[in-house]
Image (cartoon, helix red, strand yellow):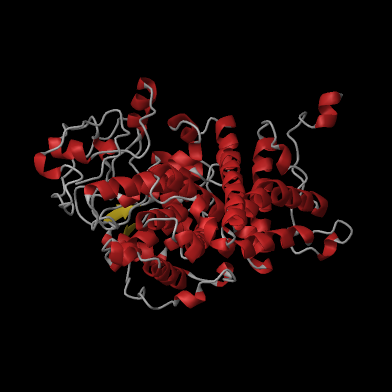
Length: 530
């Protein structure tokens, strides 16, 4: 049975007697429903065929087939959404016209997909273009043309706004991913993430989830967990910053915090598992542009979701992966219904906490807790009183800590060793510079903090402001409460002191090669004044 968060307007509260949550028993796996594809819309090209399921019948969410066939009571009870239904009647109709089903065969043609991508300005490598009229076995295609497949999958996600969940045959040999291949002793704050590759990363994630107690506590099958990691990785795009390396690093930072004794004693086992999953999934399918840009360009995501747009999209894709009907990524099979609902709700809250609009709320919360911790130490005369400002038996208190930890993990890059910190810093500046170029070329209002990043002075000012006004208030309070986090806060302060405006040529955070963006004809400030 699927876990119902009760957030979809169209969801029924009906439940069969033997599937009600909270019964203390493990959830039973229901037989897979065979879905009937929606007939092709006249005049609309075939759907991108890269997201093939392992078995016939489709790998489609219940929303994909809604309206195309009558739902059985069981199917209706299994359908849920982690985000509320936010469609108007008009947008629902338009969405259904644009949402095309995927066929079930293994032999597919990528011609239509590539033509669509070229028409929309997606750049393909020349060696792939000459093969677009051929038909490929998906097994061989994935092995030989992984880069193109990733481009096609990213394009399909942009069109359908649904997660890419590959069939079993597309995961390849997963036997190389093993518990014990990476030792927890290798997972330190000094980890140089940019020197790692996929096999080590997945094995490191296994070590994190195992050492944190998640695998044993929730009876997670290792192969399912591996497929979950690979699926999450496949649903990240490759902008300069918001990519898989960032996601892996954020999950690693979260792991470092939740396995520290003073933090761990304030959390439940469910909190720990939810924090790790939320951290890994928090930027799924990020396009490399922020919420403001999506709103200014009337991006389809901004039409589909209420604010914060991206965070709702990340959470929705995480839910789709976690609730894959084929159960290839089922990491919740060992949970009861009530545990599953709590898990999904906590993951959702963690992802939503990465919205920078809630930064002040979280900082204010931590500031108050830091003051209470200081007062408790003075009254009781010892550091043991610090953790008592958080109460694991108070759900609201614990949820705010969960949100704070995921938010802090998302902003942990400058707390790493210099090589990694500078690497993340340069990638953020590159991504901001790219967005400014899009804003300027389209004549959109420009983001002030993204200007002048082609100069070392502009880069240093941006980084100094970010550290001073965003990172230090957050990590300073967190480090005042938890001694294990204090070294991270200290390293962030070090990054700030390394910026010497008289000797910028020696600063490690400089991004080389950024060029000023030109204005469209007649749009430059000088031309407007004239």
